[in-house]
Image (cartoon, rainbow, N blue to C red; front, side):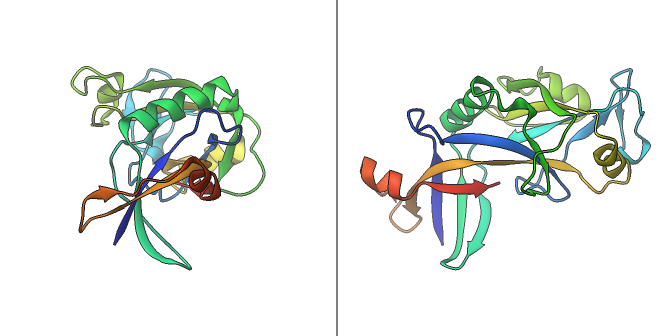
Length: 197
């Protein structure tokens, strides 16, 4: 099965992450935690209405993510370098207020990424305080959810994680020869695709 590395071209205007979606089943297979006013870890079904913060992984480097489309089945992944670029471009472009529910077309109101960082040392990272054990290079976000409909879904455990929406170019790697295809800039632009992770 093909393995495709998704990359970002910082010079391409559309490249990067456009929004963060709250979803029931995130492709990266990591759930967020809801935080009480006192910053205690709690189960999502017992959410304190006052603070309304969600914390979790937005991207995990080198994690294979299964995908299937009309052309077949494959895996995608992001390198540590791409995760860093994606997280920085997301904020530079001012996309922290762009959120969706289950990748629906319209942006939600009253939702905003209020914290963003890359895990550098899993043993002392802030995320560990909340039960998240993420590898080095993981992009963690905290999202403020002042949208009552979405917060009700959080309380009912109907949304459990983050999923990114963005534009990436791809590099193909075939496991049998362990070689990355060398794509020209033109081919990378042709392969520019919108990926929902």
